[in-house]
Image (cartoon, rainbow, N blue to C red):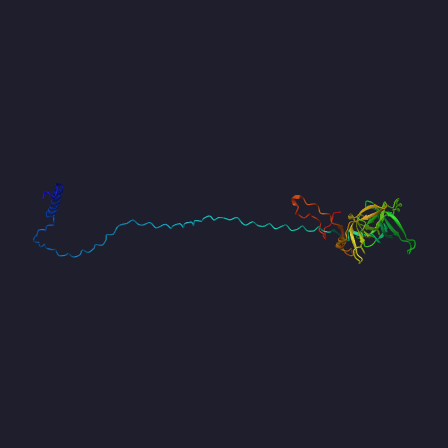
Length: 318
């Protein structure tokens, strides 16, 4: 036996057996033990008592509550809105300027001017001595003489005599004999040069370019012995109908051409057509060419120039 196992092996075997006994002894010492049996003692049980009635809760004294104050309504919170700028408004283009008027008209009442041709001429005693047949003007357009056809007896011995213009007095409102001749007036001396003076009746009125506008058939004189207008026969100039118009005396100008005095007025065919006709029983509408429009300043270039409207009844300054 000592020959088949070595000493260390025996030691290990002994230790294993000892460990085995130690383990089994612990389970015998510390295993579960039964509780000791004790006689039961009967304990008396008291009967259940009646339920106790719940007592009413004692009133609790509280302080009088203050009336509630009405709550102020809360202001609604307005959130600022983003204001968008209005869309740009397109500025309308200014209207085109009105075309300038063709003519300027001046109304002359019949009580303010009287036709010269064939008006009776009387002396200061009221005696009719003849009829006016012409007016002679100088280069400035100022009346110098009047030609009177002095009547004879039953048409025999009639003669034309020139009297100074200052020898006459005019009364446009007179029904008869609107021209009075100073009894002491003497005939005017003969003109030295034909180019200095011009008989108006039957004189041709021209434009600056030499075209004929019409023929003078009468002159309208006011109470101050001043000519206000001439009556022009424009027959055959712009139409085939016989037509007469009144032109402002201030619109005439006199120039010397070919050693003769010529009256000029710049009235185009369109302006003549736009002029109302002259009638002896209607108010006189005397025409003048419309002035050229003034150049507009740079700051107000789009504004139309102020001009006199054609057909206006406004009385022009004399």
